[in-house]
Length: 151
Ligand SMILES: NC(=O)c1ccc[n+]([C@@H]2O[C@H](COP(=O)([O-])OP(=O)(O)OC[C@H]3O[C@@H](n4cnc5c(N)ncnc54)[C@H](OP(=O)(O)O)[C@@H]3O)[C@@H](O)[C@H]2O)c1
Image 1: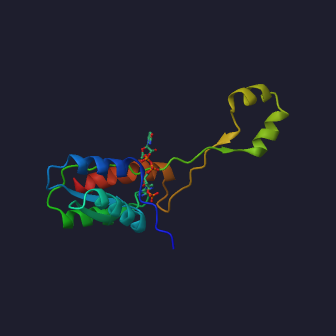
Image 2: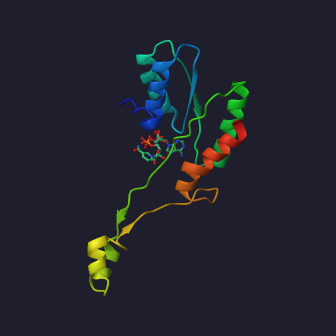
């Protein structure tokens, strides 16, 4: 079995940066949706900062129930929260709409379609079980709710 790639991106880089500037006493809590990837991120951080205090917390920012549960857990674990970095996010890639392309080829807007791509690039955004648009729930609402409850 291959080891999972760690939670990534700005979040992991931010943790690296905080730990490299830490004068001691910093307690990090990585709130991630995948526990396995969070564990891999923790291991990566501990490899370069062996004495660091890095805790994990499972949260799916696209789910209201998950965010509320995580917020409760934070309140139970910590008496004080100095900083909350809200960087989890998704950005669905635009898809090429073949059907719209062929329809546009035989329409009066063929030139504008071919020069601007208008109408042939679509971005899919699903709806969460809570009835919110995926990107809105994940990148914004979940963060808002988490901040509201824990701070
Ligand atoms: N990097 C840039 O240049 C840039 C520029 C402008 C805006 N942004 C925005 O900044 C944010 C972070 O960017 P990034 O480059 O660090 O992206 P990234 O490398 O894709 O990392 C995003 C992180 O968000 C986590 N995540 C996604 N959905 C989640 C959910 N429902 N619950 C909990 N965690 C979730 C992912 O977890 P998994 O590991 O489980 O996938 C991943 O660790 C994104 O919203 C991005 O759109 C980035």
